Image (cartoon, rainbow, N blue to C red):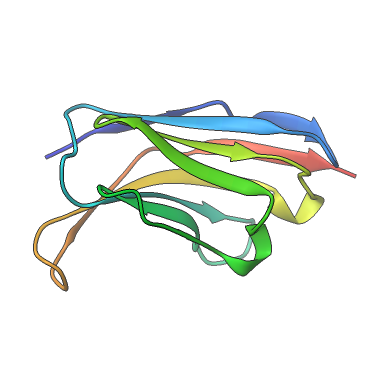
Length: 117
């Protein structure tokens, strides 16, 4: 079991920046940490992930603007620059643990990001 707590969301103007942080209740030495988002009326979508070895993936819509990082085994951050109104949504921290193909997903409660035009 692992609990995840996100922080750093808020209201920002288009072109602005925000940094999201996710703190896990225990160290994550294996598995993938990541960020997903859900806009009103839409399905939750992947934003970015980072493995325990530092390999990152990004949604095409955020490449070049968002950067995911892990400062320590219990934390992941998402630095977002040049934010656009379409980035608005609830951002969820995610951890995938377990054998590949049968991982267990853990989710935080989410943090709201609102980008005004």
